[in-house]
Length: 332
Image (cartoon, rainbow, N blue to C red; front, side):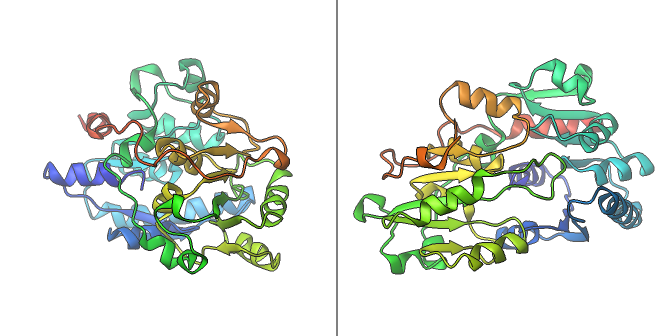
């Protein structure tokens, strides 16, 4: 989703674009749902640093063999250390997008290898420099990355039927039923920046105790999906495959997420959202919290479970041309 408007704009300008992915979470399913053809290389190795290092090496070698024959003039990614390795090995200029500055070594490697680093202007320069991005290579954009790929977005009610929510009386006109629809995103347990998250299970307990609440959980891994189903709580719906999460968020009354992107998608669509992220808070979320657009949750009992008042839709839609121009600058 993040790079979709970049891909579309590049193609509209006459550039040939090839897409690569890895087997992780719902990445491949999302590409298939969007109708974007792709080549897949390797998989996510889980939380082990040693296993991650081995898988990065495997993916990078496989990706380099494939890319060597293509003679690419530019590589673009959102936080990919694989692209950094392949770009350096094959002397392909790279541009890296990212909106979180504290992901550790992988961020430093990717940013130092890139010719252009495309980031929100809300991240301070000193944090960017500490993460490996010199000011000379920065392209800083206003707002959220979600403002760009959700520009012109219109929610599709088909996602409600796909999840069986229509059978519970939940429709696209949210004022027509008494249910409070809550979307939950679990912690990024396999990410390097993840920290223990004691709030997550407490949130699910609180939501399952409320008769008026219908919860949809969008898991990151098969283990998270299995654990949620094993709770036996109703109504708790666990997404089985890649879904139109942005439409689901748009129809929701509340989003509770332990990650970053889904929180910011809710903010971008004007949907109330509480963050239970347990890692080090990045500058983008700090700014949203300071502005009152994103709220931290310290105790599940603090959740306000009521119908949303505002109709959803892009709050600050933005033209992705600034992202495309910034990426293309890496090839000049």
